[in-house]
Image (cartoon, rainbow, N blue to C red; front, side, top):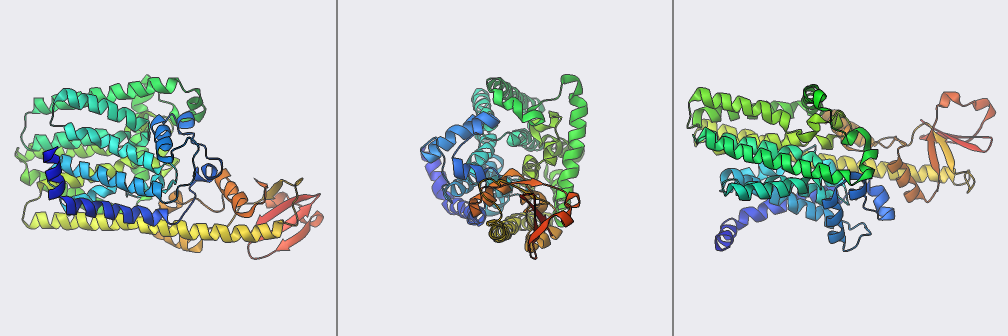
Length: 486
């Protein structure tokens, strides 16, 4: 404890800086007050559903502790503050595991474990973002004991991985990449291959054991079966093919969602990683090069975690299933920084890391801005539509037929031209899916249910045009209301 207190005092300025930077980033999202997907229902009914619907008991129990009740209420910025703090602690553990000594650049790069484009959805949830962030923390916590007693590392790993599964399973690739990266670091330091292999085997046993325990837990939850392909594992004979298909999909989708600048900077980082590895390793250049290439190959694929053996291509459903790749990039940065020397290559490598961090972390503010404009646009159009509908619907008219909902914000549309992933991160205003309908009813007080219809199927000659403006035309036919969104 005395050593820990001394370490805290020696690094307090860097620790405080890391926490503050994470808070600035997470609060830029929180202050938008955007009800993100599942938030729309939880704000009104207060249900948790983490355990029943997703078999995430860690999130369920944690939400009771944070709320002080099993009935949830919107706690404003408090959950975002907790999320930012958890991400900052996770980053500190990552830097300590690789370097022992903290630095501002390493801590800033480690923040990318949470503040990357693929995890921003998770941080946007007003109710479960802290528990999703906990899955990051649980994934790296065991590595505080990486160089300690093997039994202690085994026990902590099993417990942590089990808790990770109970908070958010999309973090399942982080532990694997961390094992690969720290094993590579030790091999480059010319430590015994057998000793490193034994440690990796202990980690593998821990991972498989924890996953098996979680699988048993899910068997006691009949609700999980209703999730369909999102929780189904491929049969044993189909696993090789499934891994191959998912690997190709995973890497191509990450590339598709990235900007050209992000991709360019990533490849520059990879080049500096390989160069610094070969030039500074304590083993032969050939061996260090092979180790580096093997790490890049395995790490890039295994960062997808257990989703590799899921027939359902989850990353195609939502970007938040692919943030494991961002941790793979963080591990590359950590290894590069640990190998840099005070020479030209070292300074250029650090410059590349700085640029990568600036462009990736600044996207958080772009995303927050897009959420803000999209929300304002939705609210404004909700009021206009509600004003036009209020005299056309009553308690008997609970269904309104519409070609879509609302137009997207023009600011959001413009931002999407530079950032392809934005269209998948920010909920579309036009979609008639349940969160948007829930929001419309909440904002307007109109208890109507909207159903999609084809405007070409409406006989306008037999219908009466009741309202017409820039946004929509409203027709009435046989007491039914039809909205044609322009």
